[in-house]
Length: 313
Ligand SMILES: [Mg+2]
Image (cartoon, rainbow, N blue to C red; front, side, top):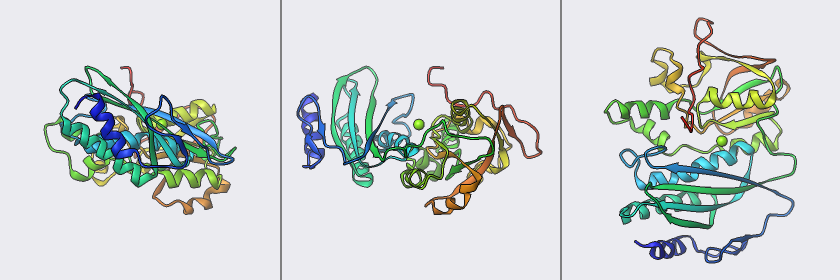
């Protein structure tokens, strides 16, 4: 397909009329009517072939869905609500198969329907690498946006869902095997915790929040750093899937991240409200005045300094 046939395909697939998009795909810019009294929340994330995904282990449809979900996860971490709008930039190498492009767009469309996202515009460029770049917006009421800055000494630290399936799937793949279906599915298409994020913000439960994209310790350091506090975590409390729990404790086994769970802090007086969340949440530690300590099963300090995904390493 050339640029124009791809644009035509996108218009056909995503061009349905939407009252809020006053100028949809087809002009230089999109023009959107914001919901009354709401503030805009915006994020952008990229997936690059060979770096964030590989067609060796993800189908084109999974790649499209993943590009949507990493952005939805960012919106979830701030408590943002629908309607969500997305702008899609595709960098396509010459000779990329039509089925790959069609499959990826099918994945994007499936998640637009699932999560209430409207594709409002984008761009296509040629490139030596295949990559997908999504900008996405959602909405939040004034003063409700969750941030990384609000952790206070004595708050408890929680995480949704499970930690580590993506790293384990990657390890299985790199060892030459086929990752377990459950792990591969979690790696390819994580569940953005939109409802949990909205409840944490609207019911003012969380003091701070981030989504776990680069490794749980690495991401918690963003919270402690920006809040000017420390943290103590217990390895034993981390919600691993059984296969990971069975392994000898080793920080590198969760260092890779891509869990797309919410990591958040809760003042102790708000703990009762946690039962309102629609998904599993696990208490993993506590906010302290300073330092960053992870205790192993025997209460000894673990070295976690080398964990976490470094985008420019
Ligand atoms: Mg994030």
